[in-house]
Amino acid sequence: MSLYPSAESLMVQAVAAGIGVMPWRLSLKVGAALGDAVRIAGVRRAVAAGNLAQAFPEWSLEERERVLADHYRELGRVACEYVRLPELAHAAPGEVIAQVHGMEHLIAAHDAGRGALLVTGHFGNFELGAAYLGRRHPVDMVVKPLANPGVQAWIAERRRRAGVGMIPLGAGVRRVFEALRQNRWVALLADQDAKSRGVFVPFLGRPSSTPVGPAEIALRTGAPLIMGFMHRRADGRHELEVLPPLLASETDGDPALLLTARHAACLEAWIRRHPANWLWLHRRWKSAPPAAESAGAA
Image (cartoon, rainbow, N blue to C red; front, side, top):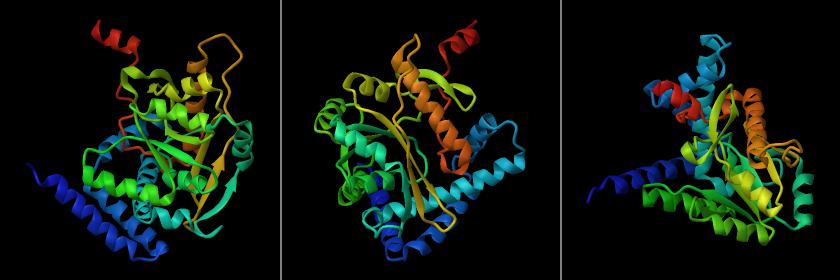
C-alpha cells in the first residue's frame, strides 16, 4: 500500500499548523508569496493562460499576465484562509467580511419556507461566504469528496467547525431535496465542465457544458436560485454580494436550459468585473458541443 496519501495528509497538516499560528493579515502576505511561487513553478499555468486568452482575446499579453499573477496570489490567500476557516467565519462584524449586500433576498427566501439554492462558482473565498451565511441560517454545501481520505477529513473538520453542513456530490441529491424541505439553504458550485451530463450554454464567449442540476432542482421544488459572490477589498477584507433570485424566462423554450444560461451569464458578468477571482486553472471548455464534435469527425 502506498504511503503517499498519508505523507500528503501530514504535509498539509504541517503547513496548516505553521500558517495557523500567524496573524490573519500576515498569512495573506504569505499566501500571496506562495501563489507567486506556484505560478513561477508553472503549476497549471499553461491551462490558466490559455483560458484567459480564449476568454479575453481583446486583451494584450501584458494585461492577461497581470491578471494571471493576481489570480495565483489570490489563490494563495484563499488557501491560507482555509486553514482558519472557523475562526474567520466567526470573526466580529466588519473584521473579516467588511460588508454584506442583499441579505433581504435570503430573508425573503427564509420567510417563503422552501429553502434556497445558493449558486456560485469557484470565485473568491466562496467557502467563507457559505460559512458566514451558515451562522445566520442552516447551510449545507454540496461537496465533491477528495481522493485523499486524510486531507478530506481535515477539510471536513474545518467545514464542520465553521458551521457548514455537507452533502456529497451525486449520491446526495435526495439529501438536497430533504434540506430544502426543511427550509435550509443549499450551496452549490455550478461552473465546472459538466461533460455529457451538462447542457451547453454561452459562457465567456464559448458554448460551455454546464451543470443543469441547480436549475432543475429550483424548478421542481420552487426554491429560489440565488447567486452570491465574495470579492476581496484592497485592505484584505471581503465583501459578500447576494443577488436577487434568478427566474426562468417566460418565453418559449426549456426552462431548465434558460435558467442555467442565466446563472452562467451572471457568473460571467462577475468574472468580467473581478477577473482575478475566478479559477482559471480548470479546463472549463474541455467538452465540445455535439455540433463541434460532428464537424471534427467529418
